[in-house]
Image 1 (tube, helix red, strand yellow):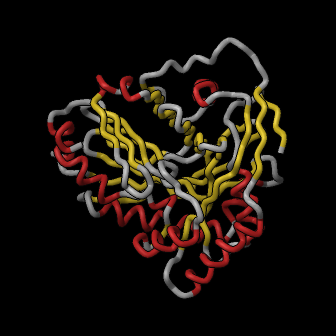
Image 2 (cartoon, rainbow, N blue to C red):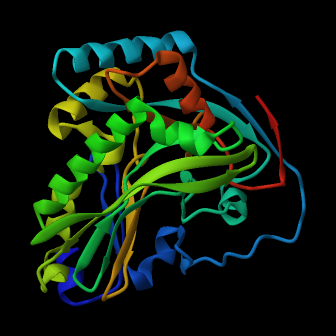
Amino acid sequence: MNEYGSRREPFFFMFDFALEKPLVIPAERIHENEILFMFNGRGNASDIVPENDVEISFRRSPVRFEQYSEAFKYVICQIRAGNSFLVNLSAPTAIATNASLDALFRLSTARYKLRFRNEFVCFSPEIFVQIQGNRIASFPMKGTIDASLPDAATRILADPKEAAEHATIVDLIRNDISQIADKVWVERYRYLEEVKTQRGSLLQVSSEIAGLLPGNWPDRLGDLFLKLLPAGSISGAPKPKTLEIIRTAEWYDRGYYTGVAGYFDGRNLDSGVLIRFIEQQENGLVFKSGGGITAQSDVYAEYQELIDKVYLPIPHRESVTT
């Protein structure tokens, strides 16, 4: 990243959650690596929906509540012991669909769409960082509610657990950016965005934290990203100890789920967090999802949020069997 950035050469990059399998690919070689992506309308894949109007089936088989509850209890014990304030706990959900990963990529609507070989597809609503000129901005997303619920917007913004969780992440991201920026501020705090799914709409709460980078930031792109990763919104705070808790609590490998992918066009950079993630495994497809746990969390609500995030962003084309 430092090398391509210093030459102002466009490239695609992707980091897994554990930072063990990073990919950095110059623009002219992206197709060779079987990568299709569309980030905020820009990428190497057409965004045209196929003409066929075949109904897409989708069935999910969530992890047993008892298994999730055991992991949740461990996380709560660690929080009460003072080892973390916020832990993002995730789990895999087995799913079945008649659509291929390629079809899901082409049919889905999302801010960040990515298909990597025949290994996974991601349709993420969450920005990681964007850099334009020398301004860097991060947009952590914390807080989700069914938009059809009465007074949904008021309920999510007034919920003390959600407010505390969001404040913790904003503080963490602000500290992360302060490691690389000369000036940092919160541009917007707890604003709502609507995400459309096949089962209706969700409201999600985001904030915008901005900073000013030194003029030579492209020369040190790799160094800058290593100081920001993994993303605070899908790990927790304080980050080092929380990562240890996640490794113990979770019984599966996140892989590229909750990692980061992005594109540098030679002048500006755009990147997203790899959430809303379907992975092809030996025994079938899994959808990886999760949520933030604090001392105020309720295990039943958190389990339901994990399930609610298992969806396809393909409005009006899908039948769902749970």
